[in-house]
Length: 401
Ligand SMILES: *Cc1c(COP(=O)(O)O)cnc(C)c1O
Image (cartoon, rainbow, N blue to C red; front, side, top):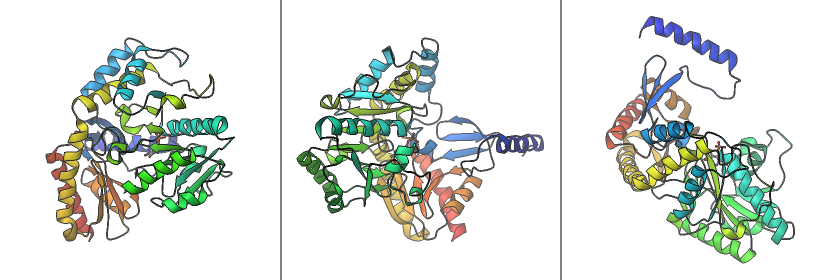
């Protein structure tokens, strides 16, 4: 490596550590550029990216459609405030409602905000229709975001005591356990919220029967069902939305991550009968911001027009097959997932070491747990890129065993 570059990079790393508030253990490199499935650091080192910004860069890095939409909209109208309609907002809302079972959209910037909106809407419903019911049932091992309320909604053991006092009104029950839900639902309950595939929890799928029975139960009790499709939405699992695998429609669905292809954007979708907010109940300075709307419209149009859901299914099947073929040789356990949201367990608790070793070999992968590896590349990934990833992964695994 060029020693001049190396020196400059070390200087920049020192600056980063001095000025960026610590919240995460980051590797010793600074990312500078991305294209397709690859990113480059300031030393010019190339990395094959199977993290995709946590299932966000669904069209790969800096896709042409996003560049064009952003530059055109930047030159036309960047910001208006949510007090006004704008053209890309209408276009994008129509695209989402035309291609889902929902009629109405609220836009925000992050997944946590979309989920907060869902919780507010469910509580509004509880206040208006269920005599003030406000409790939301969520599942253990779930992930719903990092605002204070979403940390309370999230069923993560490590977060139980963090940033007390917790926001009240959330009950956690084991995932895929209908009886546990029947146990805690009472006259205070207004909704049940869950991920159809728990993403951060390590890629665990909800059973079809569980979800169908949940729907029936919610109908019987008159309470709302909320699907957090922030990670599973927009083609990731081989369908545009994961609910299509189940044939079950929730009353509210939240989207984020892939929806902006990397531009900060999220949405809460619902049906006309739940159009219950009054002016001022919900909002946000950037809700429906034109630049974000143009980005989302371009990204989601591309996913639909190029049928990237089917492509994700095909590439996911290819990758899943290759992992299964090599499972016994490398001790891979519980290979699982749908489309391009895949994970497997290692025979040892060395997820973080594996991630670090892959990085050294020019590959980005993610370990959501101490022995779990998750793969969530762009929906546009090719078989060649999958083969390249596997050859690095298997090389590193052989060395670690
Ligand atoms: C990432 C994620 C969130 C939180 O989204 P942010 O944009 O980080 O706020 C919520 N739910 C699920 C299922 C997620 O994967």
